[in-house]
Amino acid sequence: MSHFVDRPSPNHDARPAGQAVDILLLHYTDMESAEAALDRLCDPRARVSAHYCVDEDGTAYRLVGEGRRAWHAGASSWAGASDINARSIGIELVNPGHSCGYRAFPEAQMATLIAVAKEVLARHPIPPARVLGHSDVAPARKRDPGELFDWRALAAVGIGLWPRDVKQAAEPPEPLPDMAEIQAKLARFGYAVPRHGRLDGETRAVIAAFQRHFRPTAVTGEPDGETAARLGSLLARLSPA
Image 1 (cartoon, one colour):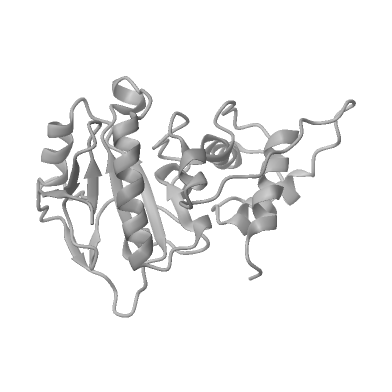
Image 2: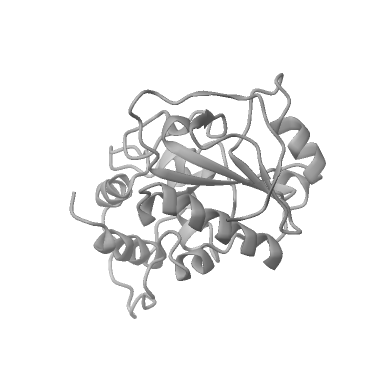
């Protein structure tokens, strides 16, 4: 069992009766310090919280019991469900974020996160494809935990998914699937994406969210061969519906 510092937050309520936990949702705090983030997560006026918060030095804070609905996802959606708070465990990672000097996540922080996440997954039947970032469930609003977060390292120890290695597009490049097909595949994976076959701003935000998680070296919001290949690789690993 991980060692936690208890820092109770009043910002929670009851989960809906019978609602299982089937999402693990990762965030960054997007604030200048751990103490500022913890103060906000525990401030009843802020009305935000998470179940856990992991500092950069590896200290883990327990804010809300897993049996309660913490308030961390906001307006969000995944695989047709919109009350993500009701069905998720939220973990905040102390990091200044894109607004305060975004930086990589230290080894001590990642090690504690892995330990905490493994314990959560042992208690709840969360499929690998539902270990997600805030940007996955709210692509138009959020960028966390961002392109510097090491999703591949988590997948290597059994937490979440990572696409199998894909070859770069052949020369000449193979044609991309049309936009309607790309949208359909993103929706099948779980993203809330338009299905009108056009590359609009909302679709670009979803593509960028996918890239931020699964192709972080080039977060462009543009469809390309490598993005399509990685999406196909992930879909091939999903269990049949």
